[in-house]
Length: 534
Image 1 (cartoon, one colour):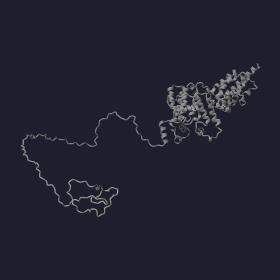
Image 2: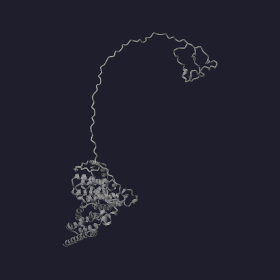
Image 3: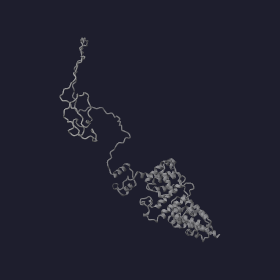
Image 4: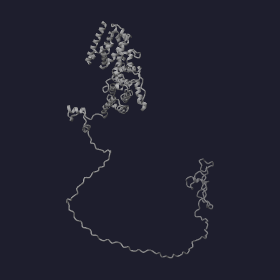
């Protein structure tokens, strides 16, 4: 109702009942105060438009042309402007200065000389020039871009060679014997600067070992050389030969020797994947050393004992004997995936022997480190640490390892030899049973081996894998000191048993030495015959 959304409750009025829109209705007197419009005007539509179905409000139409009373204005007295008489201004005279004319100078005409014509191309005498120093200011230590023409590498190398006047062996060989310089096929400036510095550092390291300078020079030069040896073609071979040759000078310098070994191997350890070349203890020591920096790298080295030595021999026989029966294509380890054509060593066994020798060099000088006692004595005494099933393989591995070490490591062999020559078992044995006593194979198979036959097997293993340098000390000993030691036939047979298998080799490599040995042997035999006759 009245514009709401709900329907109206009253019945809808018919159309005739509603008031017509245009019927005149008497209007009241208009109110001068505005009256608010009905609320239906809120709907947006004209006021005079009826809304259907609603009660329309009464709209008072505005009268048209009907007069209505209006108030008459009453005149009110208001003030108006009255003119006031103003005073008349009187002019006052002011004194002003009159302009006075100032005299100005009049310009006087000046006579100018007439130009004299100058002759053309007439030589004029000039003063004699005096030599003055010329000061040239140039920037110091400022790089100046110099245009370099494009040229081929051969032309650049040839120009560098002409400028430096350096002569290589191949260039001189071609120039003097084979071809003319125009037909050369090898560039003269071919090497890398790093590769050209390597021989110099090798020479420096060797001279350092010969003169043994103070630690400051070693600490300065050695780190540079160690990093440079990453590009070396044969770093393990160089390190092995250096430690082998200068073993006497480095014997008492254990710290210096260990820093050299760990520094050079540490630079090529991960690059060449050398984990398989060393024992587990030494591998963990290198990895801990590379992981730490500065003073933390001063780690205590592992203790080298008899168990450690047997593990080294086991690692050697594993790669030479035990692991050789498996086909190569079934092996996934790194040592069987190396291209041995371009490797430093020809096979895994040779590389492993060199690396294990370097590892033994590392422990030299350690307290209670005796190579002969750790490696050879377990075979002489038939120690239980050596597995009996692979006893001969361990024996060969020991001989291979001693053949790669200097004389200092196996020199106790001769001291042990004096003890064996004086062994009671050898003295009370009859001459008819001496050959059975020295037969190692039969004694080992029957579990009746003794110290004498085991010593013969150890000596044969070392001399078989070694060079003539391993035999020369014994031959010299046989000519000098054994003459007073050998007093029985059994001792002479033992000496012949030791040297007999190598007589053909001595004849091939040193015939003069063989003649001297045979002469001494005859002298000992004649001496023994005289003793038995007496």
